[in-house]
Amino acid sequence: MYYDNPMMDGNGWGLGGLALMIVWFVLICGMIFLAARLFSAHRHGSSDQLSPLDIAKERYAKGEIKKDEFDQIKATLS
Figure 1 (tube, helix red, strand yellow):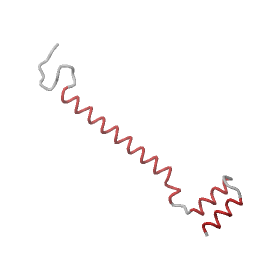
Figure 2 (tube, rainbow, N blue to C red):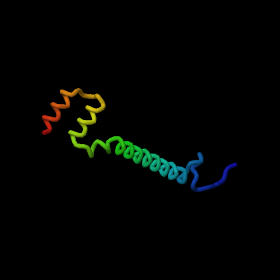
Figure 3 (spheres, rainbow, N blue to C red):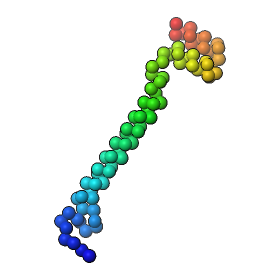
Figure 4 (cartoon, helix red, strand yellow):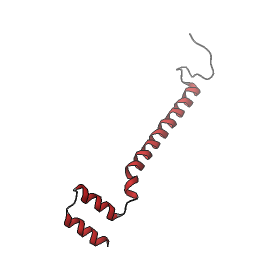
């Protein structure tokens, strides 16, 4: 069945379908952008507020660096 609709170009998309595709594209890109900012802020948020000495203390407590490395970092920062 064929209806004579000026908004349709014959394959069912027309101007309305194109506009809807653009809206969905913008929405999906916006959600990806917001998710990336959220995860980036969550990952880097706590280390931005710590001093270098606090970071060295945490690394020493976790066993990532040895005592002599910690002492060297501490002396360098003092």
